[in-house]
Image (cartoon, rainbow, N blue to C red):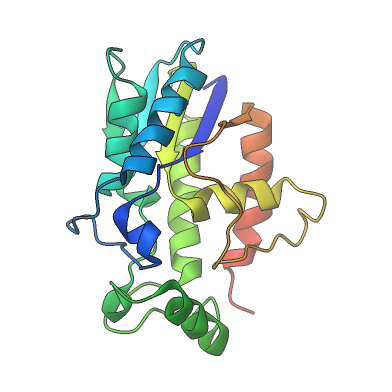
Length: 200
């Protein structure tokens, strides 16, 4: 890999309603606004020579890539490691309910009902980024979710030695200008994020 482009999916129906959807089998297509966002992303990516597109398994990311890459024959891979944290019994709950659980139980606590902790999800994201970094393709587009992108941006920010992510408002706009990274930047982000996953 020589260049990595990270982008969040377009707005989905669950996003518009403020609900959690982490199940890849859940049906939450893009809204009309989300499809327009994905179309604008297509225009932003027109000048990029993309060799591979990697998405999560969740339909809103796949649908965004479908629209953004329409008419271009770019190989695609769906990577489960980029999925949102498994929500367990919080699937379909409001974002505020989800955030309340995090505040009360911490990032190492799994979501109730067979869900996954934020730190377990971060371990997956790190594995996904390592896998992407080792790919032979030169220019790779990743279409994923707010949290995996927010962790990378936080790791490369001014306070990168102790990055923090606001789980209610991760600060990554839907289908906006991609975060563009060189391999060295991605490896730096990984090196900052790995220690966060250790229990303290």
